[in-house]
Length: 126
Image (cartoon, rainbow, N blue to C red; front, side, top):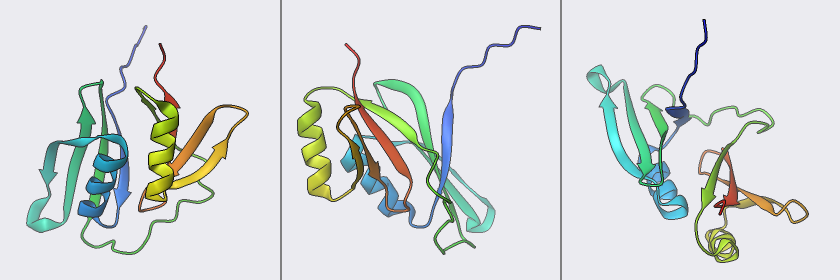
């Protein structure tokens, strides 16, 4: 059997759904593009995306989990590529106060979302 799978989405759990949606829209231009509401408000899922990729980020809010999530040592991350002026984007993220790590030798940096998830930011490949 030769199976080939296509990436569809990646899920992260968040403690404040509206705050996370606002962050991802401001920092990366990701906008809500679908949602699922759980029975009796037990959970809510919002998918974020944009026209640059069919890939979706799934934000899950659980009613009975208001405390911060244990992210361990943040050794996992997602990565997004940004078009245009990469240095201007980095400056914008610094002004937002969300840059958490920079590696100038490798030409990359990470931002941290409101729940502490790390997002690697790279320039768009030409």
